Length: 165
Ligand SMILES: [Zn+2]
Image (cartoon, protein in one colour):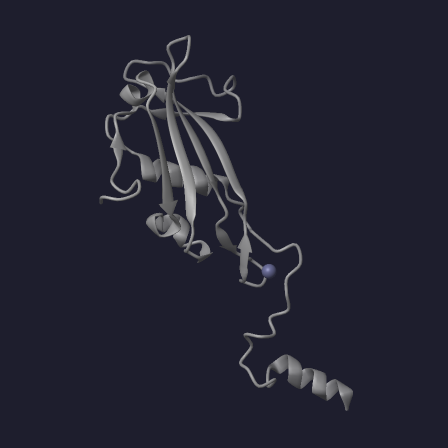
């Protein structure tokens, strides 16, 4: 609970009011829900969270995430790199404040309840999960040859041999 964003909580409204900012490098292995979807968990995400208060007195968290997680191809189950570039704007809705009208809110913004003990890592993970493709795939899958049980005795090789006869 010490390094990275693990266990980092912020008072979200205070964070926005004071224009605070934090920047971290977060290992994929620190994001268990994301790690479950990955072909490999080495590597990191660059995470930046900025607090801001706009002219109308609304409080915001601006979340920037950059990285290239290796997802699992839904066709061949091999690793497929996904370039991630997230810029989310989350409006903090404090007690007694009105929730923004869904119809008026633009797509790049969302609203969350203001929290005095907001777990930043979990929030970042939510944003990453939302941004991932539902069914990641290679444009073109490699035929799985090398990892098919060595010695050229794969079913494919056997089939090919049969066809030649
Ligand atoms: Zn594939």
